[in-house]
Length: 227
Image 1 (cartoon, helix red, strand yellow):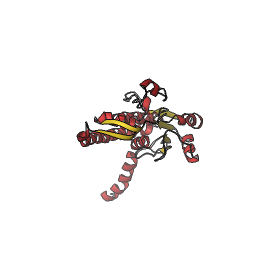
Image 2: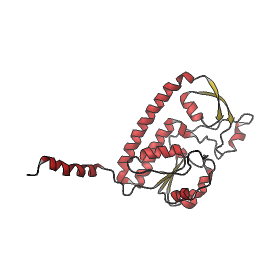
Image 3: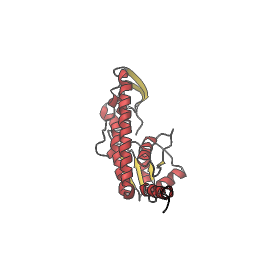
C-alpha cells in the first residue's frame, strides 16, 4: 500500500493545479492612466498585468506615444480608458492601432456619478462648458463610489473576452470593491474635521473627491485642463 505521506506529495500539486486560474488565454489589456491601471490590476490579480499608456508624471490631456506604448495599444485585446473627455488625443490611436480591440470607456458606464464642470472665475457656465468635449468633469475616479461601479464593469468586460477566468475576475472585483469601501470609510472619518474649512487648490480637478467627502474649496489657481 502506498504510504499516506507519499500520497499527499502526489495529491497536493494536482489539487493546486485544478484550483489554479487558467492563464493561457488571458487577454492583453491596455489602460490610459495610473488610477485606471490600478483598478484593472486589482481585477486581473493572479492572472495578468495590464499595460499603462500614460506613465506617471505625464499629463493625460496630451501625449505623444512612444513606440512601446503604440505596441501596447496595437497588441491589446481590451483597452480601458476614462474616455475622450479626459484624453481626446487617444481617440485616433484607438481607431488606428487598436481597431480590433474591445474598448471600454469608463465615463459611459451605467451608474457612474458625473458632475458638471465648475465655472471658471469671471466666465459664464455655458461659455466654460463649450471649451470641453462635454459638460462633465472627467476626473470621476476620485469618487470611490464610481471606482467601485467601474470594478464590476471591468470584470464583466474581461470575463466576456476570457470566460474561462470569469469567476476569478468577478471575485477579484468583489474583493477590490470591499477594499475601496473600507478606504472610503477611513477617509470619511479622517476628513470629517476638515468639513466646512475653506481652502484653495492649485488645480481644479478634485471636485468628485470634495463632493463625496463634504469638503469646501473656495477657488483654484488654475482651472481644470481636461480639454
